[in-house]
Image 1: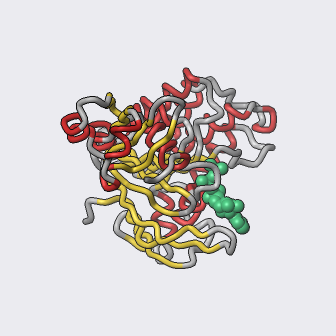
Image 2: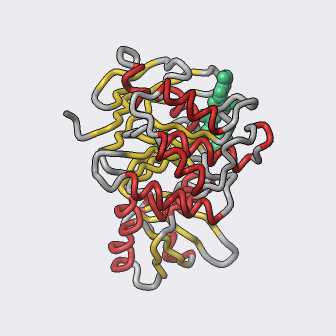
Image 3: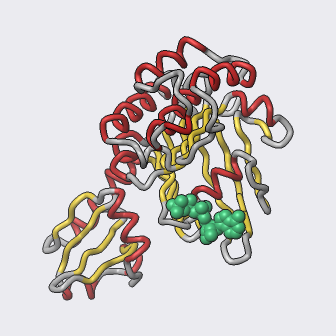
Length: 287
Ligand SMILES: Nc1ncnc2c1ncn2[C@@H]1O[C@H](COP(=O)(O)OP(=O)(O)OP(=O)(O)O)[C@@H](O)[C@H]1O
């Protein structure tokens, strides 16, 4: 059995004016993979292709070592999904949704579901149409976490939640992957949340993969160097990912801050936060 829960190889979706272009990344067992990118980068397109909600133009996707298209029912049974919009018919109550889900998922756990409804303070007998947006998302989490899923796929799911419940959800995700057999693929604009919990980060920009790295590798190695024009002019192009010119100095994103520190003692080099790395790639200039 593969050590990867999800393998995406050369995934391409051509919308004409937008192309998700030969995206390749893997989600190993036991990890939380954060998917980042600007608005319109292609995160939802990637997730929708993975879930076969839209058809791909090209490429290969394997989940649990299997081709989605040939074993969709078995695979869907083991995936918990939360989007930022409501999944459930408005006229149902959480109790009715629980009954319905027990017929959908082979490993539905009513007690777990009832416990999550209580933990998330969701009224079991109120219709979903009268729920707030955050309550609907919490309900989707309760369902996703109550059928012994092995893979959670969350598309911008936590953005509408308050910081307290978001923190609870992050703890739940960390717990979820503890047994080393479960994984999470989570897209989010709240990069600080991903910084807290993700083991890997996959970054898409304008439909193309920028990188897929372990978070430790990013945090340990990437750096932002502040320097004057003289140092900047002498920098080797190959050492720089991108730079931004400020009033009196240059800010430069470097892949290996330890090398930069030694080589340019006059410059100040600090670790790069993931949000900064993303900003440099999207808004920075290349030398
Ligand atoms: N059904 C569609 N037909 C044509 N183009 C589409 C369709 N769905 C998405 N797109 C295009 O694909 C591109 C990527 O959109 P996508 O929703 O994947 O981005 P995203 O990274 O999830 O963005 P956001 O952070 O804003 O949610 C956009 O240019 C969008 O217009």
